[in-house]
Amino acid sequence: MGVNVAVVGATGAVGEEILKILEERNFPVDELRLLASKRSAGNKLSFKGKEYVVEELVNDSFKGINIGLFSAGGDISKEFAPIAVKANTIVVDNTSAFRMDVNVPLVVPEVNSDDIKKHQGIIANPNCSTIQMVLALKPIHDEAVVKRVVVSTYQAVSGAGHRAIQELKNESRSILENDGSFKRDIFPHQIAFNVLPQIPQSDAFLESGYTSEEMKMIEETKKILGTDSIRVTATTVRVPVDRGHSESVNIETERKITADRAREILSKFPGITVVDDPAGQRYPLATDAAGKDDTFVGRIREDNSIENGLNLWVVSDNLRKGAALNAVQIAEKLVNG
Ligand code: NAP
Ligand code: 3JN
Image (cartoon, rainbow, N blue to C red; front, side, top):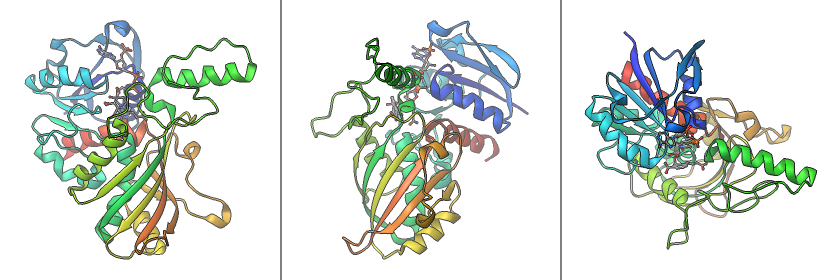
């Protein structure tokens, strides 16, 4: 039997990717409801060759819906996820609204799929930068116990939605053509031909000097790996890349793990492809990861400045494994067990 699915935020960068992935993976969709704001109500989106009309998200939107895939921002999730749960819809939430709630599992299926069973109506999808990092950390943690992580991210503009992708294109064109027409809307500074050490672009910094994106990586990693003892520090950075987040991950472990052994266990881990051929100048690239499902790991080498240290370069498609694919994989686990 099929599943009745609602996609909340269906017209967004993540929502559109969810539709693509449901179709590609032949998710057993029976009824499909596409929900967004009043602005896009009436627009048409296609799924498996059929056109669907986008509806405005309202309190009644979840009648008869089994699974709701939410990606319309935290405020919308806070308001409508409880309404959906009351209507017997299981919510897979792509926002930060419930990620740190003790009653809400935070899941990367390859890492902690058993946590799904503890859900009380809502399952949270982690932040994109966390997902790709914990995938790489998990096999190393199981082998050598991760003590500390120092991560710097290089995040694509698509992480900030449709309008951010357009802003990078428009600003790049305007600079190249020197036409002076460009007006900034999303990013606080020039993003074209630049690097901004601030994600998200709209929030103020926290009193600690960290951004909320950095705190998400720190807190979510502990929750997914099920330990408070991993110390994480993060610097999250926006780069003028369309799609694909890259991360430099420095790891300190309790036990020694050689680069060869790390290469071996990472290459066996589901959802990871090792691309690590320095002689051939082959390493993970955002342009190669875009459109792919796997998370790519390379530049695997020992950090000789400490006793048990390792450096990795980790790249993944932020809209796929970082958001839509991970959410659909959770939905698949709900359906297939
Ligand atoms: P986006 O391209 O700007 O799309 C936003 C979506 O939310 C659109 O479908 C929009 O509908 C809908 N929306 C906005 N206000 C709404 C309202 N009042 N009622 C119903 N729908 C509304 O953004 P995006 O990149 O897809 O991201 C959306 C959200 O997903 C983010 O805010 C974030 O919480 C989450 N996200 C998570 C990750 C992750 O790391 N897991 C990554 C990226 C994003 P309209 O077309 O009607 O405006
Ligand atoms: O900017 C990125 O690369 C990822 C952005 C994720 C994001 C954007 C707006 C709101 C989130 C998130 O998933 O943490 C949120 C949010 O839900 O807080």
